[in-house]
Length: 357
Figure 1 (cartoon, rainbow, N blue to C red):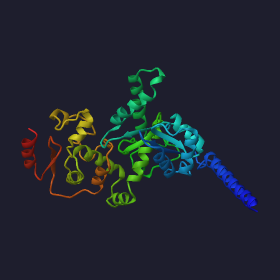
Figure 2: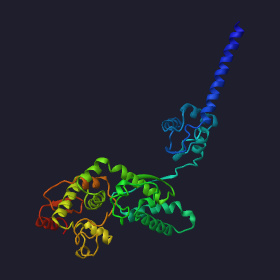
Figure 3: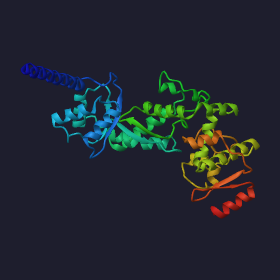
Figure 4: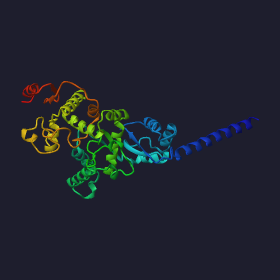
């Protein structure tokens, strides 16, 4: 009787072991998902196996942390996972995932780029050209030649008047009121992005346009329509405000000044538009600069320029939509970046003599 009980217990133990083994094999061989979409994953330098497995579980890249750690222990991979940035397909099984993390072969296919508020097309192109040249250094072309090639291609892409030529089968409603001869300057939303190495220029521009589409909320669009303005006019105004002053509140006051000057038929006299023409970064353009013939010269031409002079951030866009109405008609930017507002021209001249001369 006792012998039978022992045999029965051994059979149960064997069945449990076999079951656990089958479960283990299933866990390491079956993908977590059928999706091939990739997820971004980071292994920090010095990070332990337990923390890595927990993070993989949270990201949905493995089903069971204990099974993953056991598999690493069995394969003696505990100290072999390489730190770095990974872009991992969700349809990898645990065996293939481990191979990737041990070999480091999927070390990030992406780059982090940061587009700064107020950059124009040329500035964005110059910034991105460095990445392009680095990624294509093995083509045999000189670095400067690669950069120049990219900058020309990027500028041509942004100058495209119909976004569907770059991004087929997608229409952006915020571009519908854009004049037919205007490109995409102003709509390349400044932000931090992850883009694939060697990403095509249209793919990078698409990320920026998609972001603009998201940031310009339905409430903001409704307010623009209520005011009888177009999104294009708002973006153009925002681009000037972005380059003229710092700080959300000062930008709202400045936008209010510009709208009031337009209402009274007074030229905007924006130094930022003159700098856009000359390519300078002058705090106070020369008299000769303000006399240059250009539709973008708001000293010589009333109203808004033909289009945006840069790509404004959210603060500047909100200032253009929700300006603050004041009695001010003039302002200047001090060397320290702060703004001084004036109600009269005489007061404005006094402030110029005080802070700029």
